[in-house]
Length: 133
Image (cartoon, rainbow, N blue to C red; front, side, top):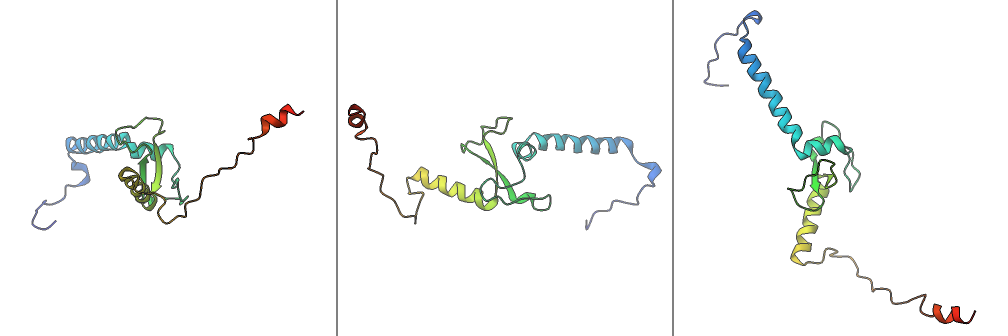
């Protein structure tokens, strides 16, 4: 770092054990805090695969895997992971776009052909057919 003088390094035998203990304690506390977060819990519970498109992730690209709250409530974090699903960045963005359209009353299936509801009832005359037997 430019402009800062850290002075000469201490030989290995002269490490400040109090400072080292403090660094290790801080690192452990940060790790525990990180592991307590819902993302880390979900990554431990669920496979590193996007639940929508099936893309698999490794440590190198794990930062592209997000945790999605199925009910869209970020305060609902059950420890069993039942409200979470791992989604890639693209599927997660798509899910939130679809949800935003749903909330605003837009048709979520934009561009898809709407099909008429079925009107045929195959059991309409069943009662009459059973009477005749």
